[in-house]
Image 1 (tube, protein in one colour):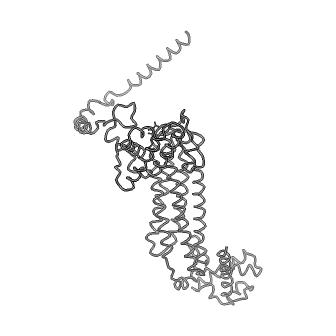
Image 2 (cartoon, rainbow, N blue to C red):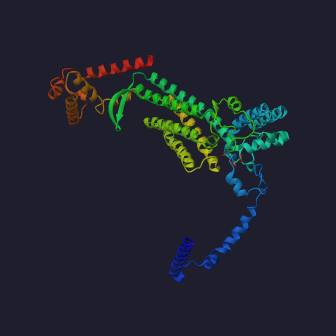
Image 3 (tube, protein in one colour):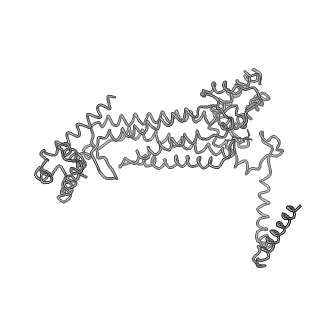
Length: 474
Ligand SMILES: N/C(=N\CCC[C@H](N)C(=O)O)N[C@@H](CC(=O)O)C(=O)O
């Protein structure tokens, strides 16, 4: 009793404190509801009357179940995904066929129903591919469009297809299958670009170009040396995609809404039929997870950055390559959109996740275009060898060769670096190239210099050519 009275008394105290704090407000500082209503209501009334007309709920949805009324036009437009997820149609049909076969084998539907479902789906695919299929926004997404069309065409049997399945595991199955194919398409384009770059290297074998550090001419390099650097990067890009493909190749079917099903399904059968490695182990993970797309778009982003840097290398007529550089921003943006989408989500399916498709579709379309144009560009580019040859001496590119020469003659590297620095300073004051300094001038910097300059350059070029010939043979 005592504690109750303490509770009561403290509650009373806080209530009186609260009301006394309101008393401190000046009378005219309190918002006047009447004033706002008078200002806004006439407009609101007109607006609401118009809105009310279009905001009438429509007939109930196929998935509406316990809801008696459908949604308004605005909600329908806002929540539909058919405008973009119809891209999944082939994989949706593939998944449904595998699911129907499994249901029949498990005795959950008859073999007659299975056959008519499979025939019906084949006919729907034919209609889609011939442009005869009507995609309906009121049927919301690709899954509902295909299922409803199947019901229209084969009747009752179609209603059994969704046994032991939810759109939650269905959409993930479609999406993983789609991404798997998209990765194969990107891998093929990466390989094509690599081949184009190697061909370009072979066509210009032996061509020496300036190599840059800090945006300044640093050392002469062979063109193939530069080009093969991109080939190496693209090889790692392929590796990342292959890793991603291996990790995403697990089947979510059977996870249903989130907790699986009590019906006797065979998850291994659908997984095998669809070419997955195995069914996913955890049904909640299966419907929640989007790390496969995050990984995929991360890999695409790194490829996009590589292509952007390739685009940065061309200095003349680089219009398409400038766009390659520009479009890399979209690919990285798509990844960031997905990261933000997933950041605050609790486990299992949330409608937010419908937003995962467009960034993936955009990333894939963009990267495929970037790879195609980069390959075309590499096949068509020509180098003005004469001009490159003439411009090569500018920038004291042979400084490192001179430093190496001195090191070979026993001069410590730091000392040789200092000598070459002084030689470059002499060149700058005389406005000439290192190779134009006389033997006497070089000897005055260090007596160890005994040979003419061109000899050193030639020996280093031999070294590079030999090295690349070995690489070419390998
Ligand atoms: N609405 C829903 N999933 C929709 C998945 C497909 C959607 N267009 C998407 O792309 O995410 N899930 C319901 C079940 C269902 O409608 O199948 C739920 O979790 O209650």
